[in-house]
Length: 113
Length: 106
Image (cartoon, rainbow over the protein chains, first blue to last red):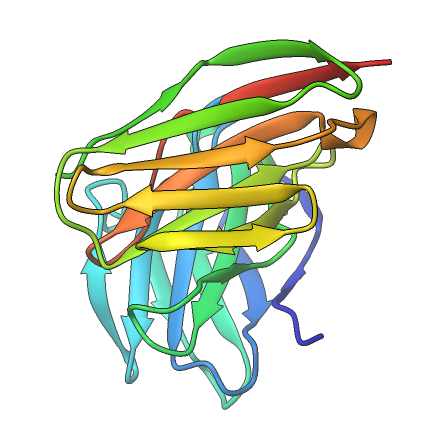
């Protein structure tokens, strides 16, 4: 069964460093998403991306965050200057269309020290 | 934005018991999904169910969109059912509830 894949599975970074999290969505999907989950809390929406542009973003997704689809398969989340509070599990997800099932990757656990 | 409330927040059951998890939401949605988050943090899709009823083995779900609630039923619980169950809804990007933490004891 096709799945969303994410790399790295776990990254430790120093505060102030830039981090890029990578995702390969399911191949025929057109909508891509990033979510995050701080330890012990609920999953929070960050951003959705369609047709090479952001279609919706939450207030969490500030100027420190950016997304990109650099080629036909990858979808990346960049955090420009990480803060301690950015430590969380980051989930990439994709769907065929905006009203269909959204499939999640296994997550990238980011620890900022 | 849309609000999602899940109940109960915690549930402890013996193996073999049945359970009902509830999700209430504050506005019309075009997407409702139930997820199981396992102890390794993976979000496993259980159901895409913006309306109607679906069944998959021991699990079933019902969404009454006009009443703005959804129910997840787990029958004959097994220890592997333990974890957090999330309901998530959308007009667009999914909004998650806080989850129901289910513990199935042997």
